Length: 173
Length: 163
Image 1 (tube, rainbow over the protein chains, first blue to last red):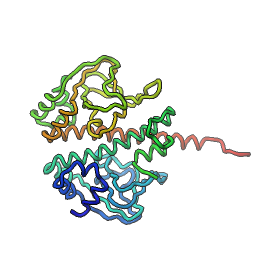
Image 2: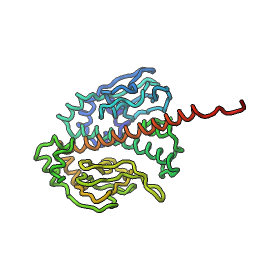
Image 3: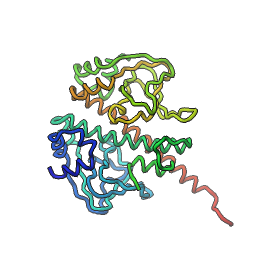
Image 4: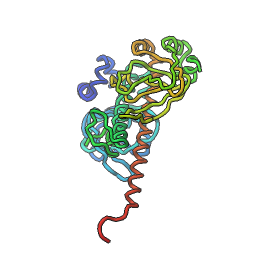
């Protein structure tokens, strides 16, 4: 399967939970897409009907309407997954910085995967859920630190609203 | 509400067949707890998934000397599932407000269901995904509101320096 090795490298937890056959089923459900610098992958305040797995390249997260750059997304990130999972609008705009390669998940493909390989579908949704939960947790750490001055162990950034936003979006500098 | 009825009404388990709901019901144990009882402690390794049947649960972050309430849970809501699927310590404490009745599913039984009953696994998966996404939206809103407050305060500050 093309991209198989790259996928395993970038999404080790997800691929580690799958057999070789299941990994093939998962990759078959995803559509690879090469992106050019400057392309807008996700638009703020619009729903994203596709969830993306970033394999290669770098994306920038921008908060509208100010156009403030929050940070960058690196390979191994999910993009658009919250909007994909809850049907709400995207919270930020995501723009391609360096030429990138993403794997896209459409609802129809996930439904087919649910019928044909339910545990593979469950593992994928679980991986996205766990990733978002980790970001919510780190953002909450920041907000709690900001409000009360006490910071849980392991929090390296000085609490600030921008750092809370970065944590929530999974965007490093 | 009893467990069978709660599972019938919960939006994620309502669509299960009676047999599958029955399988989940059988795997769970119902217990009652008094006001203040801590069901999940922040920082601990969670080992149970819970479904609140009666009463109210408060979700808090712990600080030296006090707790900060993040949200309240109502009957029909699941909690504790994240700790079963992400190998991380619990990110918040869940305590009873008044006496509560809960149904619980221990880790081992949860794993058995995940591997043996795909519809139940999916229903529980949807429940935890819905909660996490709702938490995401909630935190987004809090940060946005705080940024707007900051921006509007900055506008109203008098200009620095000599006039």
